[in-house]
Length: 138
Image (cartoon, rainbow, N blue to C red; front, side):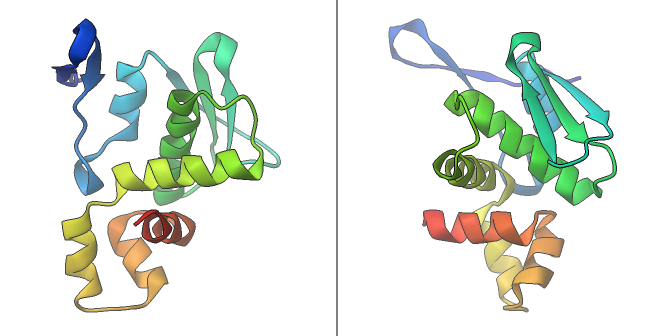
């Protein structure tokens, strides 16, 4: 796995420098955060967080766009330190993940030839829900 570059902030803290849009890789991001990603049969949800084990479990029967979206959403919960999945936290995690998964230039390029949210989401490799979260964050 490639290591992601760090940016030094004030007081000696560091932050990951992450690409956006199609270049964003949630698997690399999880690895850089020291999180394990597992794929398992999960009945109800798309993912399960196991904080004490630093693990995100993603439902194994999801298509790749949904896996990528679910993992970015899980990483958002991790970084935002959400203690539960109340609706407010779910909306925050969707917006946070959308800002990584969707690059404004890529969205503009696709939107130039279609206004259909389903087609835009497919082209960007995200779900319609995340596309809507991105648009609501603006």
